[in-house]
Length: 600
Image 1 (tube, one colour):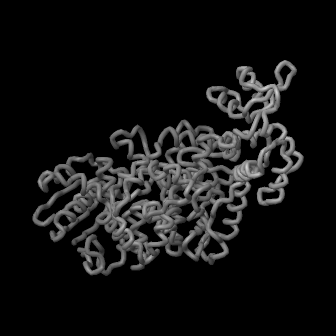
Image 2 (cartoon, helix red, strand yellow; image 1 turned 180 degrees about the horizontal axis):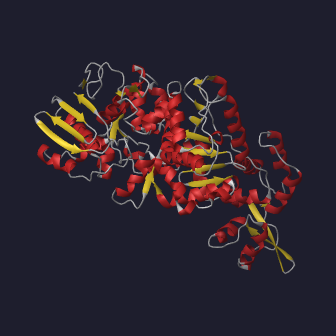
Image 3 (cartoon, rainbow, N blue to C red; image 1 turned 120 degrees about the vertical axis):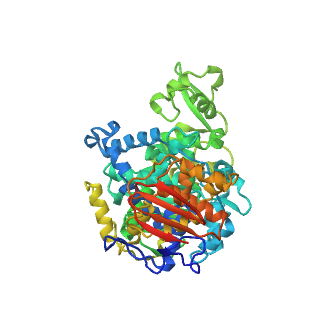
């Protein structure tokens, strides 16, 4: 029987000196260096702060979802019928609607319970100092760009509740855990937070839409996670939705929300199949060529020419500048002039838009004539005149002289400061320079790309990842993120179970020991994971179901918190899990087919 080594880890069932187990005489996984145990256990719990500290975990979750049988089942869904006849963007549009129909964006920070700043700082101290974490992670005091937080974004995310030492775990979900939200009260279907959705999108883009992994880049900021996909002019996945280049510049409220992270936050992690780059760590594993491709494509995505349409979209987005503009309209052969804010006010509820020259006149024709002036309105820029001028005199978004020259020449009276404010706002609108990790300070050194090819079957992918896991940490961590205890060391799983599953402990506090047993015994004997993959205790409690082995580990987790000095033994056979808690013995039927003996 394998026993805990209390000097190494007092609150977790650990294996003894055998680093790993053997199955039928064959070693199934690499040994875990002692210094990497925290990282490997974080691959199980996958909280946002763990991914920030251990950036390899971000892509490991993508690979875990690619290996999941659930995502391959989508291929047989009627919604994706004849997908192979569609162009890439059309495929992605179909995928977007499928995700919208089947998953909600989950903002509930209490789903996975609370921890404390002190506990997490202690965990991460060997890897990152407190000041760095506080400046870069929303749970540790980060407040980002002042403008961003003037939007009350902390309250929007519910972070304003956590102002003392208590903070939420804010865990990222695997595909299986996302699907299991349908079992949780008040959820209509699956659900997940932004990292869950971004990693799900990345996996599905490859498996379902045949987008090469090389063209899928994951971007993480302190408060958000999204993907940039190198298709056509580029597109962003943003929670459940997509943002194309045209949408990026349409000036709507929905787009403004989608832009928040890239406009007002530093991008802390960029990752793809070649590796990652992190704003804090000096070593980057991503291919330099791949990162430069991403940088150039993202720059092109967030930059556009100034046209009449862009001017109108700019004014829709930056409404504070509307009072500086007027729009000309011909009615019965006579010129009329309208304050542009009146035109935008009429857009609401109308199919016609100020920014669409083909329909703008129809919009203006709907507006009462008494709103118009017969002469140009003093101190207001004529939208058409400025558009025509810029068409013949393009300005550079990085050239101060050209901007000042434009301000001097535009047909509008008024002080220079007012005009410069408009021009600077316009330039900011048509070009965004996201704050990416600085490559000048990085040493690029990685294990090489993960070379999954389009057309590979799921079994081929799993076998390929097995062959490289000895030399590629991200591939190895993917098997831990997928929770397969048949081919992973149990230490990280049990460490995460005992240390980072507060919900099952908190929700059962009012029940006595004798009441506790039937709570777990009477749950449906049904795992949210297939085969030898295992759910964590809080997943068992949140979704109120679990295989016998999963329920036994959940009960052990609660018991360890209640009775830290009681011996706990767990015997796992192919169809039965026997849990001994002091003098009590409980038996759970199990269909996981695992065999193990553990003692605390």
